[in-house]
Amino acid sequence: MTHPAAPPSQFDAILFDVGGVLLTNGWDHKERSKVLEHFRLDRAAFESRHEQPNDAWERDTLTIQGYLDATVFYEPRNFSHQDFIEVMKTQSVPIPLTGIPVLKDLAASGTYLVGVLNNESRELHEYRMEKYNLKLYLDIQLSSCYLGMRKPDADIYRRAIDIVGRPASRILFIDDRAGNAEAARSAGMNAIQFLGEEQLRSRLKELEIL
Image (cartoon, rainbow, N blue to C red):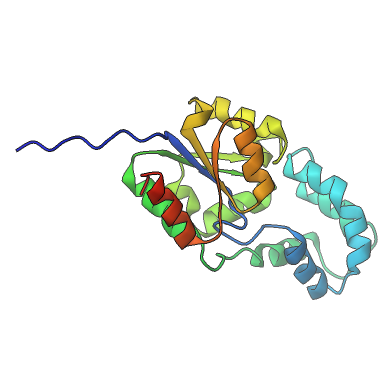
């Protein structure tokens, strides 16, 4: 007895943000605050130095050593660069209502190209992928540290579309930040703002993905 073929999906690729969708953010204000408190550093002084080198660090035009030299080690400290980096890493944990089970289910289906499209420095991105075995479920990693571009700049979405190699309309992007999701739509992608695993599963069911 033959069975009718499943209807073809309207999507070829599904891309996830990482911070706020799968894990906590790698180095956002909450993570910075906790690390600065741990080392008893002045937050205002740090934040006044953070923005420009962080942009370069996430685009991989500045090393982590350079970033920390600009923001922390511009004067002598009683701890090392590596001490600071290790505490930075401890801030990365799965979020409540994480989308990781959805990522795993989509990867297991074998139906879609599954990847990430995120802003992150090389050191933290690669640590996070290894620590939580996320790379096992990914076909492609479109991180700012590899592309030299950051969300929500239009260029990173265009580059992602080029690399995936499919029409923008057949790429679905999932991000917790409304501005990043809207920027993806402006580039021609479809996008979902992530509000938790159950909400995401419901939206993917509506789209006949799960």
